[in-house]
Length: 77
Image (cartoon, rainbow, N blue to C red; front, side, top):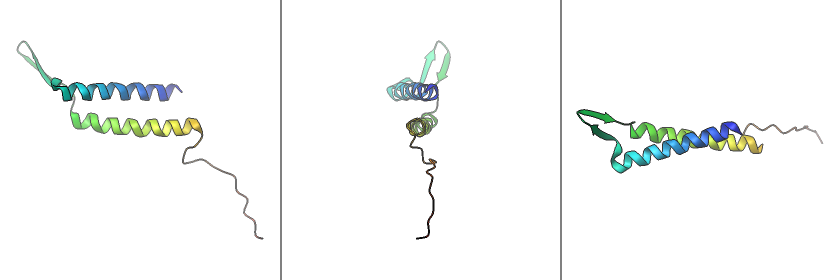
């Protein structure tokens, strides 16, 4: 459960960062210094990655992962 919580927390941070950049906070000046925040394309790709990781982790926790093994006994009738 801790990994899922961590992934969800990171996703929320990236979504907040994306919203800040879209709101015009990508570049700003403090005195004579010009500061720039993260790259929007990189943030968007990280959000997609985290969403996939969260889905995989939720599936794993629920026991329905795609690598689930079910015992099958072949029979020749």
